[in-house]
Length: 257
Image (cartoon, rainbow, N blue to C red; front, side, top):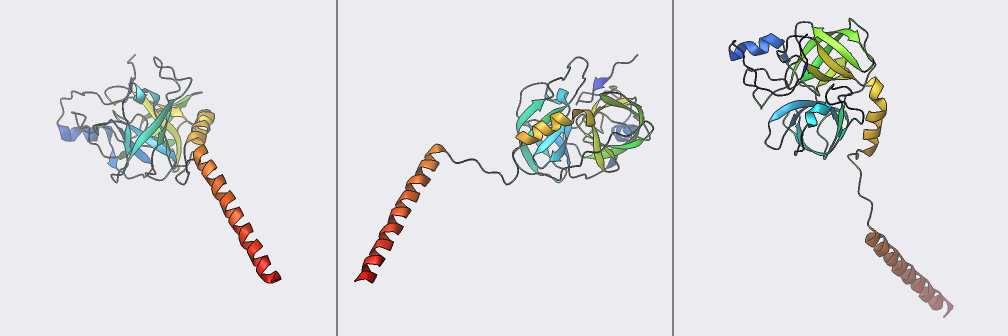
């Protein structure tokens, strides 16, 4: 049985010419605002990510394999830095179970996608991500989409098979959409990008997503004032109160005269 590999950026040796690689996975250009390219500090894209709140994105946990500075890029070119990354507490590295991580961003970058219900077997879903579409795995990628069919619904994952297209290297962390709603995150598949793909369900990880969202700042949040600021405000308030009292007192004396 062929072992499934994470859909990360790897060197793929193909006999077919570069133009044929995109035809193999059957993808079409797309521009879903909430689907982002996950890149390193040099701008090299190796995974995908999906916005679920204004400054919170989800990706595959195996995409965070080594410490480095990360950023996300929207299809339109906007870039945000990953301020904090949190791997699912039950992520199993060898088995790649619970393959989910949350990314807190330092700025708004796109529109969040709503999370929907897990589809049943035989349902058709859309895969959206920044997959490599050339044999050399070009690091500056564009967003593409394709359709797959849910072959099996498991307790933690969905298994999807090709329906005109499939997922490939760089799709890890990408969106799985059903009726426009986000239902799963792309996890892993065969290195040749020609077999079943495993998708991490989101309904069973609702607690993790909500917990990460509670820690993510909103776009209008402000930092609480420091103790020094509070002291300054208290002193200023006291000065204003004394000035007002003195003014009232003088006014009373003038009226009495």
